[in-house]
Structure formats: C-alpha cells, structure tokens
Image (tube, rainbow, N blue to C red; front, side, top):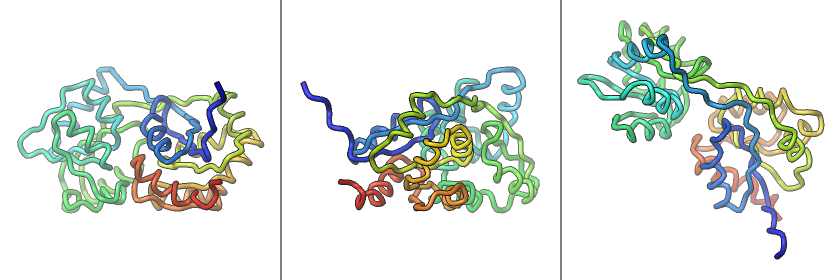
Amino acid sequence: MGHPTPPAWYVISLRPQGGHDALRLAARRHGAGLLALSPWRIQPCDDPATRGALEKALACPLVVFTSPAAVSAAQALASLQTQRGNTWLAVGAGTAGALRRVGIPATSPHRMDSEGLLALPALQDIRGIDIGFVTAPDGRNLLVPTLQARGAQVHRAEVYRREPLTLPPRALNALAALDRPACLLLSSVGALERVLAQLPPAAAARILTASVVAASARLAEAARAAGFGDVVQADGPRPAQLMKSASTVMAPRIR
C-alpha cells in the first residue's frame, strides 16, 4: 500500500483542545488538512458560588450566553428552562443552536460578534433592567461595560474557565516544517496571543506567512497588528463560513 497523498493546503485551528472536529470536517470538504494549535482547554466550573451566580443570572428577564461552551456548562449545573417573560440572547448562531437543543428559543444577531449582539433591539432600552450574563471569566470583555453604560444591572455567571495549555513539541515542529500553503482561521484574539507567545522563531516565522481568515473586523485588525499581511474577513465564525472564505483566498496558491 502507498502512502496517502497529503492535502494540497492546510488550515491552522486555534480552537480549544477537543474542539477541532467541526473545522477538520469542513476543511476536508475543501481538500485541506488541519493543524491544531490549542492554547487552552475548556474546564466547567462546579462549586456553590458558581451555582448561586448562575441561579441569579437565569432569573433575569434578559439572559445572554456568550458561547456554546457556556450553554453546555450551564446545562450541567442547572436544567435550563424558559420562564414567562424571559428573553434569551446568544452572541452567535452556534450558541443559539446550543440553546435550542436544550429547549430554549434564543435570538442571535446576523453579525455574530459583540457588536452585532449590542445592536439587537432587546438590548437598546435597558436602563434599570437586570441582565444575566453566562460566560467564562474573560469572556466578551466589550459586552458587560457597554451594557452597564446603557444602565443595565449585569449579573455575571462564569460557568467555565479556559485552562492554559503548553503547545506540544510535535505541533510546533509540524508548523515549522509545514511545506504547503496555509491559512489561519481566527475566532479569538486571546487564543492568537497565547499561541504566538509560545512559538519558537522558526514556527513564528512560518505562521506569519499564512493567510488569515478572521471571523470579525475586530479579529482582522488584531491579526494585522500581530504582523500578518494577508488578512480577510469571513461572513461569520461558523466552520462553513470560515472555510468558504479560506478556500477563496487559497485557490490561487493551491497547486
């Protein structure tokens, strides 16, 4: 038996450990391989303080979830149930889908980022309104100050945390030795910063030659500030959206 033909190009994923499957499948549909560089793993919180904070957040008339991981962690702590008069909001379609799968009708913006969420009608006239905010300790830093500036009382429930990981030598060597065109799929500034901080010179030089497909304008700006030269913005953060833009960008470079 011969060796399998290597992919014509690669995408670089900075998703949390164990969170690359959807991107890997989408990449395969476009003839690409995937190089995983996970800067952290998701660790749900389970302690009395977290449970109390979540109970208070879920009792608010407006409840915001910032990620599918927040939905999963919250569901493990308390059975999520709609209450009369509650409005449930999600930053993106993936988070809204996770809520719907546990029976919660959620609204998400077409523009799937903090700015898009803040533009929703439900978050305009919120002076004196209690808003539950279900997230991680460093999740969506723009949202809470803006909601508070609009006069809302924000009740934050940090139901999971991101545990930092050291990038393994095997992944670093694979990046440095990558001899095919590559595209970095970017959906987190924090993930990018943590990965870049760990790269030895050869790997750092290689990653900066990659094109970047960013999930938002803010992420595209962060990529340019980090030294990437070829940066485009996708229609959103979902794997299919990222890969659609990546395949368009990479088409001229694929042999």
